[in-house]
Image 1 (tube, helix red, strand yellow):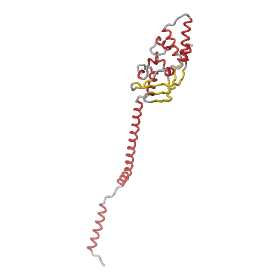
Image 2 (cartoon, helix red, strand yellow):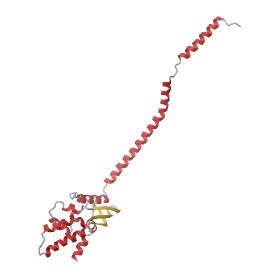
Image 3 (cartoon, helix red, strand yellow):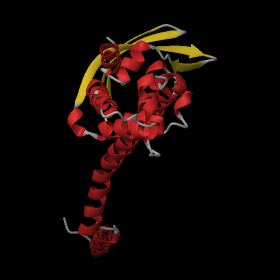
Image 4 (tube, helix red, strand yellow):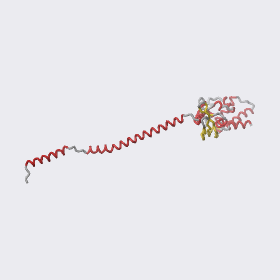
Length: 239
């Protein structure tokens, strides 16, 4: 069977039309394919990055809250803090601030240290505590009172007082009465004398709440802890 020329023409036109349509369809270049692949890969990476950022922010907020709470707790008045501040002020020679935590006049009211008033020095009080070290061992407290066991190190006041007494006695044996200024100088010399050494003692210190504030109670335990060996030397001298 022979194909008519008109049919051949129609088939050729259909073929051309199909080829043209195929040619018109946009073909993806290598660059576009690469971009698409990158976008697909970047999407999960970005999502992971967002999750990490959220997690990091949550952790940062938790840490910040912990720091704030810690600062508040530290800032709150407590018997241990009152004791710590008293020791720090004594060591630093901040006598104007010390009354916030202890009655300083009562603390220093020791006859054996009275001669220090005659010494020609503006740092009379500060030198008493320059070697002071402390370590809180145990705390027992209720709402109104606390008992704190503290290990305290300071100058060996037993040696200081004994050396001081020897100088005064020697002066008296030479038929000379030492003046208050001279006695003060003898005491200051021994306080500066590094050969007297240091001594450590453990005492139970009482801290009591007064008008809503914690204050260190001045008693024999506190005085014997801060001036170790002094009462022993004075009592021995009296005997």
